[in-house]
Amino acid sequence: MSRENTGTSEEIFKDTQSGDVSPLGLPRELVEAVELMFFAYRDFVSDPDTILENHGFGRAHHRVLHFVGRRPGMSVSELLHILSITKQSLSRVLKDLIEEKYIIQETDEHDRRIKRLLLSPKGHELHRNLIDPQIRRFQESLEKSEIGTLEKWQEFMRHLTNTETKIDFMDDAGRKHQL
Amino acid sequence: MSRENTGTSEEIFKDTQSGDVSPLGLPRELVEAVELMFFAYRDFVSDPDTILENHGFGRAHHRVLHFVGRRPGMSVSELLHILSITKQSLSRVLKDLIEEKYIIQETDEHDRRIKRLLLSPKGHELHRNLIDPQIRRFQESLEKSEIGTLEKWQEFMRHLTNTETKIDFMDDAGRKHQL
DNA sequence: TAAAATGAGTCAACATGGCTGACGTATTCT
DNA sequence: AGAATACGTCAGCCATGTTGACTCATTTTA
Figure 1 (cartoon, rainbow over the protein chains, first blue to last red):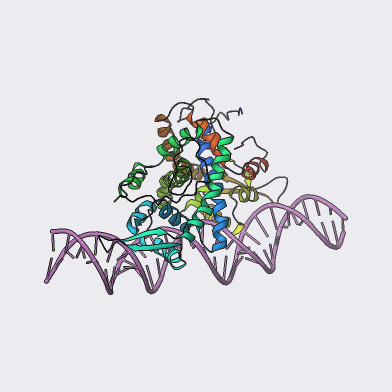
Figure 2 (cartoon, each protein chain N blue to C red):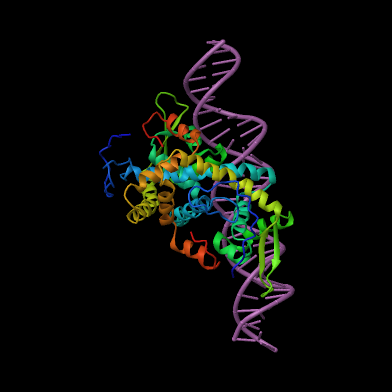
């Protein structure tokens, strides 16, 4: 996989390993990494997207369904924090999901202002159908990779995410899921 | 705020290593991987997003700028294939970039129907400013990781992307960049 | 050389999912 | 009793994806 150097690059960035530099004067493998982020993410969400279409839902619905499924009983404001979107953006999709009985709301026993969100059996089923192809994609990719790849991949992905994101995800919940 | 496990998970997926299973009856580390994909991607694009705002541009402009920068002289239809969007979606952002002189069009010498796309110096500068924080994010994350992490990460990301995506990216160009 | 195919650009119309600011209502905290 | 919190909702804006139809220049092909 050797590539020739154009020679005219500014080389502000010292290359990590190979000394190979892209036409932008940036380390080629990091520019490739930027592109892999784009392609991998796009393809990764493409399978659920297809399923969602048949239900008249979009990616936003998927996210809500996912996090409610993962953290049953979460409040609306917890969900807002995790998704980092506005109340209005959330309410549109949440309304759909509640009206069509994928998500159930239960008033909190101790603070009746808070509504706890839960998946109905129908919601669980859809969630499962949406995540299945993604899990399968991971498993198939892992089969092609050396052992220990997933751990290293996860570690690096964690480093890439903002600390606030990780704190947000842990804090409001009080549960043991930590990203 | 602890909530008890419902206990009714189907456990169709055998867990890869730990035997640990999420509330969904799916291997927990793979469900976490799905979430890392969401969070890491979101945070990863957040830096350029901020810069783009100041220019009145969006993510779509960024993508065009990036691929034209990476593969100078590419045609409009090659760009359409890589981005996998429609001509209309592309034309809106491409028009902006051409009007504001970030991108230059040159008619192909041998086939005058084809327009070759290039970045102007202004375009290169913006491209550079947009990619810089992403490269830096990678470098900082790498510093926190074991050596060899980038290679493993890239390999796995490649496995995650569709084969068509990879082929598309190689074929139309005739150049040696292959994802 | 006439007809077909290709590359690029455009129009109108639509959907999704972000955003803002303002406001209402129920409930709880001080 | 009044302030703060949690949730919901209205109206409207913007970016970026979609479709289908159509033009125009240029090249290929029958």
